[in-house]
Image 1 (tube, rainbow, N blue to C red):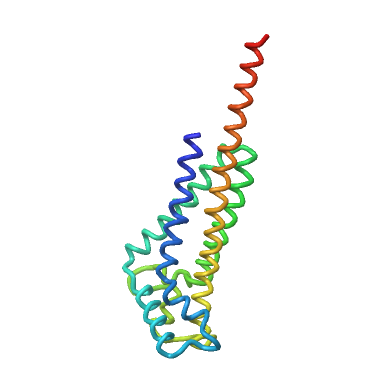
Image 2 (cartoon, rainbow, N blue to C red; image 1 turned 60 degrees about the vertical axis):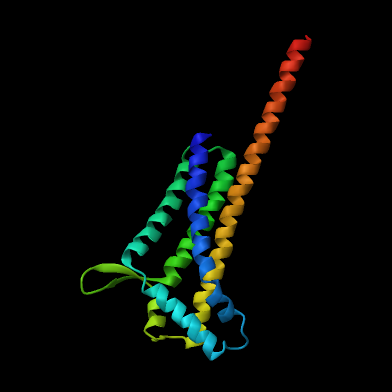
Length: 192
């Protein structure tokens, strides 16, 4: 049980951390997603400024973010390593959702390895916004893609947390049932 508990912490904490990060973007994302048909110029400029600040985060913060991603993956691997059928169901589905969020993050928000003057480093897709360079989509659509990506990632990560909570509840219910069965067996032996 300690093995599973530690793995659960390594899954729940990174997912919660990322939900917190996504929540900080909600002020820009909300006004970008739900303004019809196009966000007002002031709201779009505020969202653009917010994403520009995200593009300018120091590298150490990027490394911390990607380290937390690896911690979440290692938590899933730890939980799946010596799991029973219940673990395979809950943790397998949780890992699939976690990987979906990482693919969305990598495909939409991280453009990939871009060569800078000094070395290769990860840049966030917000650099287009910070440079006011929009490639295929107009400004409002680019901002909406970023906001929609944040929303999708938040929903998927909530699914990870719900699966982990469901697994905890199922394990506690199974343990309680096992204890009740053992107590009934002991009472039955004493009565004979």
